[in-house]
Length: 70
Image (cartoon, rainbow, N blue to C red):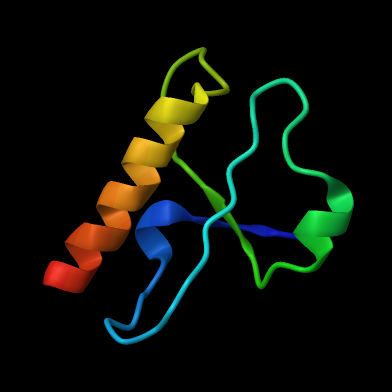
């Protein structure tokens, strides 16, 4: 499944969504990913290639809220 950059997502304010997060070691099971409509990628700069679950969830959930408020 190809990922889409977080800032490129378009959310409808009335659309119901579910967001699944996996940890940086085992991630999300492939069977679960195959049932999803898509995968979100959080853009990052520098040497770090992963975020902890709390940080990743905060970034993604804020972007969803921000897009629904505007």
